[in-house]
Structure formats: C-alpha cells, structure tokens
Image (spheres, helix red, strand yellow):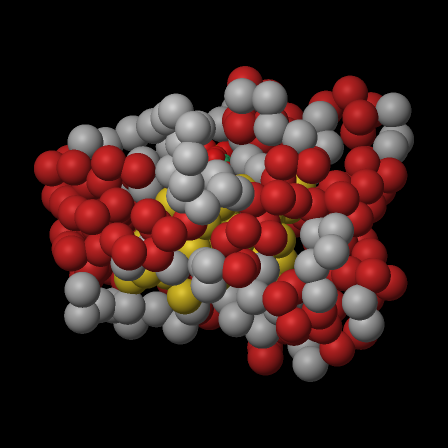
Length: 256
Ligand code: PEP
C-alpha cells in the first residue's frame, strides 16, 4: 500500500474558539467548500459545539470530532467528558495528546495512552498527536522523542486498532507560531513515524495508517506539504477557522 491508497484526512482543530451559533455559521461555510473533497474532512470542535455541529453536518461529507475525552466511563471526574457521551452525540473522531493539553493541562504519554484505548474501545477514532519541542529538535533528539511517544501512546493497542488511529505529527514549535516545518522536515518525521509503526506492528499496518502533519499549515503551504509521500493529511488550527483557507487546504489534499 502507498500514499494513494491511504485515507487522506484534513481535520480542523478549532481549539477554544466558536460558540454553538458561531460553530453552525462556520460549518455552513465549510460544507460547500468541502463537498467535492477527495479526502476525509473533519471539524474537531469544543464540547459545547458538538451537538450543533453533528446536526449541522448531517447529510454532508463533513465529520465531527471532539478535542479530548476521558478514559473512565463515568464517575467523579469534574469537568471531564466520557467516550460514551461523545458517541451518543454522534462524534466520530477525537483529538488526543494535543501539545496544548500536554503543555498546559498536565497531559502525559500515560494519560494519552489511557484515552486512546478508551476511545478505541468506544468505537471512536483517535487522532493521536505527537511532536517535539524546539529545544528537543535543537538537541537533535527529535527521533528519540517521537519514537518514545509512539511506543507509549500506543502501548497495548493492537494492530487492528492501530489502523483505526490517525497519527498527527505536530512539531510543537510550529503550532500557532506561523513557523511551518518545511515539507522536507515534515516528510522526514512522518516517514520516521511510519518506520516506528512498522517496527511496532508490521509493514502492512504501518502503510495503512494515516499520518498527518500539523503546525501552521495554511492555504499557501498545504500543497507542498501534502505532496510528500508520508504526509497523508493535515491537522489544522488557525486556518481551519476560515472556510476559504480550509477549503483551499482540502483542495490541495484532493489533488494530493
Ligand atoms: C493545531 O492546533 O493542531 C495546529 C496545528 O494549529 P495551527 O495550525 O494554528 O498551527
């Protein structure tokens, strides 16, 4: 299997932006620009927007994702949201281990792993984010960091379940900074991730998993990033909040 056979996925990560009414309005702009997409299109939105988002995209090719989930089915976890809650609302994907969760909310590889397993058990498709900090890149340990994250975040996840996961390579220094990894840098690490997946599982599994790049991807740089053999899609923050830019990224992914 090669890139052409893998599922290309363009996912917007809205972060803490848009009220439910604003979410509806933005999705109504995204739906027409996504309708001829030759890739999967997902909007990952804040919890309170999920029900509105699911309702708004009904009958279209746009899918809805959450931005996190807890690993317990229910219980004394004030402020958390379970996988069952997401499923009942109609969510299909969930972003896990985003660097902002790791940086600001104490997310660790252990909790990312617990969330990933819970999401899979509930039938949700995890978008598992990995990526190095700037100083880790400067210390030339990018591969060590990524290899560790892949091992820990996917610990005890079998090959069949791993194929339901999307891996998002998001160098932390490129997120929300306007500093994009070059297409060659993105390709180098996405290829390395695939090699690690092949080591952990097997070549067939590694070739089947969609690997996205995320980090200041926009309408101007998407085509070059997405042309790379191991970059199967994008996880997009800022540019996913502007329908025209998000649409241009979808077009770039469609052209491959
Ligand atoms: C993200 O939030 O995952 C992201 C990549 O953000 P941005 O595109 O704004 O860098």
